[in-house]
Length: 196
DNA sequence: GTCGTGATAGCCT
DNA sequence: GGCTATCACGACG
Image 1 (cartoon, helix red, strand yellow):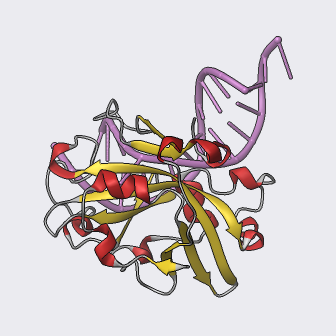
Image 2: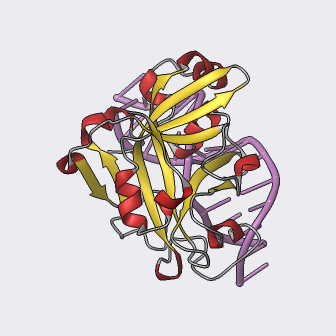
């Protein structure tokens, strides 16, 4: 039974949400058709307690969305070229979020290939935060948008994840907080993950 | 396969 | 002015 995740789902412990999002399906409705891809890698960012979090030192124009209510997208621009997709968690004023780092294509693969023309392997279409936003055509227009919107939402399609299949390890691309084990991925789908 | 590097721009001090 | 929650490419051998 397919079920769309609502805002409430995200208003709780960020680590729990990060792990439980693994195996869920990201759905993107575009003018060209529908894209579906299974979430296989996430990272948790824990607000004031986490030196690696954008909001660690307080609110700035970039991270303001993280301080709003749970269940909205936080999309930021990085390295002058890429966007990263997060979903805000916890209650308002508590700036925590889950970064979606990699997805495994399920449907609309032709659209993803059109968005990333040079990639031949299906494994590499969306195995990284910058890659998946290009493949799914996600940019800062989604910043602050609710997860329940028609263009982009998260589906529970009944896919079962064995708790023992979840690998916990360190996050990628950080200096501050690099040692914290807040990255999670599915061992059985590691072929679609950014880094083992 | 691994390593080094350039692209590119907004944010923060 | 330095840094960044990245990626793809070319050199190597």
